[in-house]
Length: 100
Image (cartoon, rainbow, N blue to C red; front, top):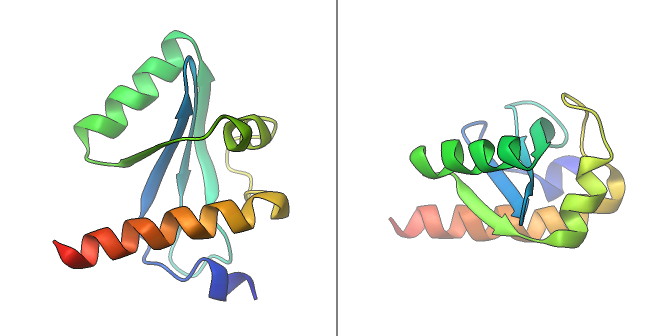
């Protein structure tokens, strides 16, 4: 079931942010779910967002999702409670990339 939800290539990296708080995710090839690769508040969050922008990484503003994901540790798999929201976001990213 997990692979069906997050069936996307390993190059996919997504940034989710709210003002002054950010969480970066990456879906590794062969992994069942995305992993948290960075998180921070304040200046660190601004730097995470800046790096995402410089690398053309999708940025999604979703305060509830950031609150959920920021409670997890870096390198942790995203919690099951986030699957539905993330599946919608990843599907949007893949659809957009296919059009390019």
